[in-house]
Amino acid sequence: MTVHPSEISPRMSATPPPEPDQGARDLRDEVVALARSLPGGLRRLTVRDGDRAIEVEWAADAPATGSPAPVTPAPAAPAASDDRSEAAEAAGAVRSPLVGTFYAAPSPGADPFVRVGDEVEPGQTVGIVEAMKLMNPILADEAGVVAEVLVGDAESVEYDQILMRLRPTGRAR
Image 1: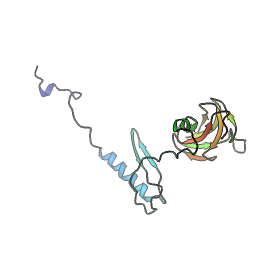
Image 2 (image 1 turned 180 degrees about the horizontal axis):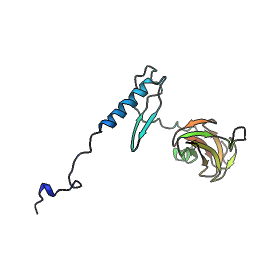
Image 3 (image 1 turned 135 degrees about the vertical axis):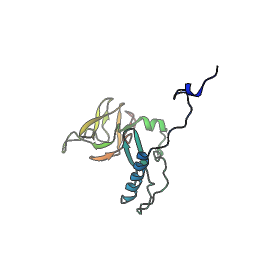
Image 4 (image 1 turned 180 degrees about the vertical axis):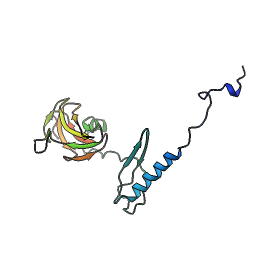
């Protein structure tokens, strides 16, 4: 069977993905200009426009002159100082499900949801992340004892950032 070119549907043609349009190039140029104008070493900047996103990250030791260091992947978590494996370390991590502001207590001046040494149960609220004026409870996925709280009250947090670490109940540290 012979197929005439006029019978080929757009789905059948093997064309490369389209080049970024002028709007995407302009957005990229604006983000780079913005990143270079910021004081100090930029850690991470993400700009979203609809389904497009541009992410810029400087090394932690980047000079404040605005000249970027090479883009590098996010640093790996520090190695555990005890015998726990990375899997066990990750299993005991309470992570932020979104970007926002972490709050350790339900209201200013109130006692925190949890402190180091407190036992928690699965589903227990251990903090709040505020995003766009919405308070999102942070729940423990597993039972454990709060071993370490890694962020301060009213501190900005990133998506998937470790907020605190839990160790299994009954295990001394």
